[in-house]
Image (cartoon, rainbow, N blue to C red; front, side, top):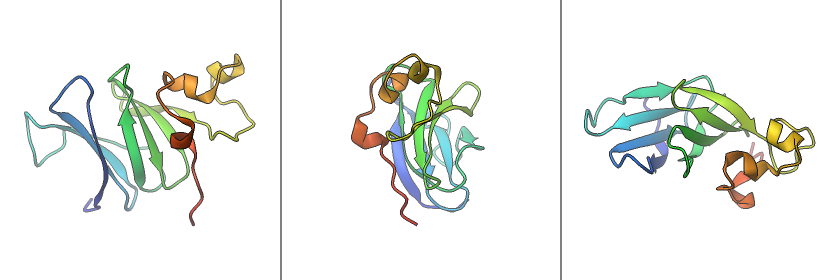
Length: 127
């Protein structure tokens, strides 16, 4: 995949681990361990977005969780142990609860430890 990098996020607890996102094609998230290699990613997270990844960031409270936003207008929460998305974070105006926290009366931001501001969760259809 020769797509350009759309975002870079550094692991909050492991200074030489970083994730890159690419916007083109099927997109993708690549995990890098710069102690091991600067030319080959440690692993690639696939099976999430049906298009490029626009932005992503590590959970500030748990470095095994990451959130990404894609061209497919979806925001996904990733488990870095399984290398799979474990939840879709709903848009602010979504009427259908999609996680247990919302069903119990919590706000969408509470699902991700409250670290995401409302403006960071909004997605726009730019097609």
